[in-house]
Image 1 (cartoon, rainbow, N blue to C red):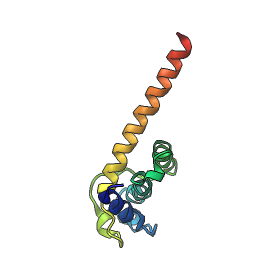
Image 2 (cartoon, rainbow, N blue to C red):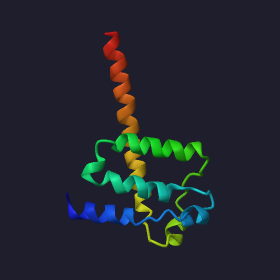
Image 3 (cartoon, helix red, strand yellow):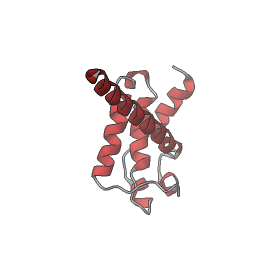
Image 4 (cartoon, rainbow, N blue to C red):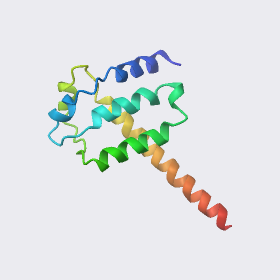
Length: 116
């Protein structure tokens, strides 16, 4: 495992779940908190088997609970007592997009394989 990934995973793991990021956000977005939790595991080899399922489920739950979306004001990072970087939000967005595509294309290929 690359040291950079291990260091990033440790940074993400330092999130204490205090909610300061959500309180500081004008949209009440939980993106920093959720991205730290998703990022902590997506960077580790142990987290790979459930990586796609995890990010899809976490984002779906955040949407279901009515949290706002990130508008890149970065008040969350400024308010975070552990200094979690907003870079985790970008990483989670990339992971979510990739997982969504993989899920959509695997479902499409399964449906076309059954009909051929």
